[in-house]
Length: 350
Image (cartoon, rainbow, N blue to C red):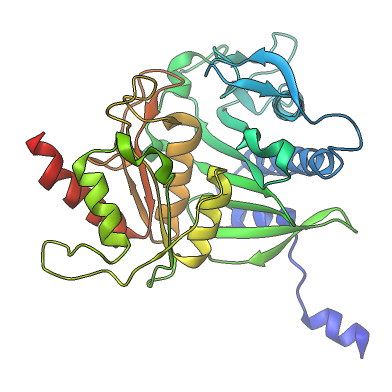
């Protein structure tokens, strides 16, 4: 009986799932499949360190700052190094770029050069590490635009519309990997006993009825009138422009963007981090377009949602620099469109 049950219950590992998707593309060579699996392997290693953080003395700060001006956590450094070292020698990549590094990361001349480009935020939300709060990794994969030789900066500065695949890992009570290669969004949970990611959330679709909104209201004094009124709309205190009220949403904000995004993807809602118009530190927003905005925008669109900087879809923005910042509104389509409506109506007057 047990054997019969096991025969009918298909256990789908991430490797098996990626290989199955590859069958839908007769022209596929398997290189992207291997690249995605290497990222999953990096996630396993990072997860093993996050769960043992207090035991192996990798909590705390390194005493240095990154290109963003943020203090580098020890786990930040480990995750950054791990992703690079698992991918620099494979012959699959032309170039990489990390949110922790100022410049592009070329492939060493000792190794063959591939056709893909990998951008990654090695440890999103790392300021929460010492407090045992969920953190994550975000990645984006493009095809190179240059024709030969080592990859160049232009290969990394592509619109999100050009993405081949994108995903993230959440390191929390369990470790999950969520990714899309343009054929829906799929979530895998790491089984720590067997050490493998198993498919637990196939074909994720953002629910039609949203539950949550996520924003740091501690910065409300810096927001424009449109953002403040949009927030009141989400709370059920302000009508939209058709006189309709939102059924007040619950506010949930962790402070690790991946975790906030993941909850809203599964439960429905909107995450936003607007430009702080009166804060000289973040006049153009705080979040990075290349490492956070574009890959998460690609994921949410594949799940039926959308994204915006308040004026246009994040996937349509042409990056001008590796660490370009952007305002971000991402999640349920109708809520993101409402945000644009409030911004266009009220902020154009300022």
